[in-house]
Length: 346
Image (tube, rainbow, N blue to C red; front, top):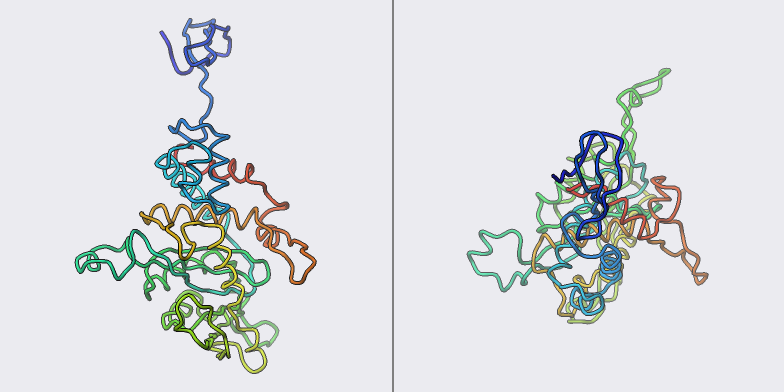
């Protein structure tokens, strides 16, 4: 009789099975059993070392097929690996990104598409499918720490704007009601916990008001470009109009900006091959796009170090370090081990 476990402590060696795993025999009940080593990848049989290499290559900008040629892992297995690791990254980030103290959040949306572009969708697909066609990566970044506390992938709609802003607001630390009360004859009032800057998308003001209410200072920046209609040619910015919506007036309006989150958009297109412009790389399933971006978000927050302005090339601490979420810069092996603790089979 072979059992998977035995509750008794006394045991003796009983050789190995066909797979080379150690077998034991209980001295008390005579049951033979095998010690199964925990599998970090669940039912997937791919080698863990090779899986780490493949995931690191995908995060560093290689395509699925290039990774397949380099590592020898089938592209279907790679997609399954991305979904497994990416879904675990989502759970990991949801657990870690709580009680944050951030100063200035900049919001933006980045265009991409799934399966085919919006113009090629049929009438029925436009009416019934939400998971194909043009998609937008809703991201935000803190100007000081460079932390990306949350993201959302979906259509560019007012509903998604409200969902995204509400999710970000839940991750920030808010003062209790007592802190807003009047003390020693002082006038009571709400204390803003963060400043928010967005572009001119019409859905943002309502979403900010719904998610943050009086706890945020809010401003809008609208940039003006020259030659913006020329295909494949970078446009020239000729001006910017800043408008304080709540709590930002006068000279303080100069602090309104979205330059940091727009720079993050460039980093995302470099690190994820499926986001590269003018290439054959794109996502065929929304699930794969969400998992891939979750991988990038975890790697960016805990492993990536942005550089300080200037020519020195000096690196800042990671975003998670600057936000007091960790005490050191993680390597990919540490991120891999921590993230897979949140895998469904664990």
